[in-house]
Length: 79
Length: 142
Image 1 (cartoon, helix red, strand yellow):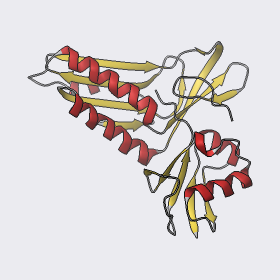
Image 2 (cartoon, helix red, strand yellow; image 1 turned 180 degrees about the horizontal axis):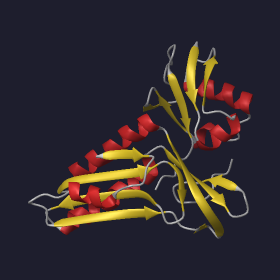
Image 3 (tube, chains in turn purple, blue; image 1 turned 90 degrees about the vertical axis):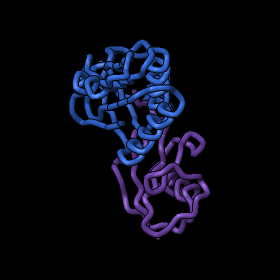
Image 4 (cartoon, chains in turn yellow, blue; image 1 turned 135 degrees about the horizontal axis):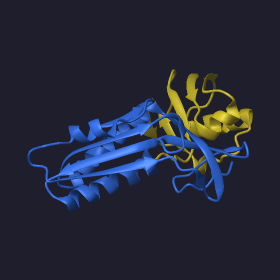
């Protein structure tokens, strides 16, 4: 399936891009992150991240659909 | 109202929008860019935000504050992009009939915005390094 993945903060630095189109067999964010982590060498483990799908917080087990926008959110630090 | 802004925040105009005949108190908070953190000299900050989710989560926090506290109105605006020392990074304003609710709601909004809204602060240090921070301003270890 094709997903659109957005990167922020340290993940953006590691990936060297803001976003990418990913063709993957992963069916949930957990499997997708594990695949992207291996590809980009992300140091951050999934227990440090939150997930958003199509602009809303989502569980790691959420079933993904073709064209979903998936974001792995590092610890936030606004203010 | 919650808003991200890539331009300087006009706090005077925002405070005016909170005015109401039944308001007896207005509490505002300004978060400024300071020149140091955790013993290191900071030259400037860069803020990134996940716009869509930051907007909805920010609006949710304002709505929660309205439910929890007896307030009349509340605004929060957070900057994105590159900010220099002394610049206004985040502004919160709350109007209420009485000061207790205004203070409590203002505190609630800034605390939860820092904890929950997908905005990231990158500190650029005087030695040329830079680093992403946690909500408590400790570095994010990779």
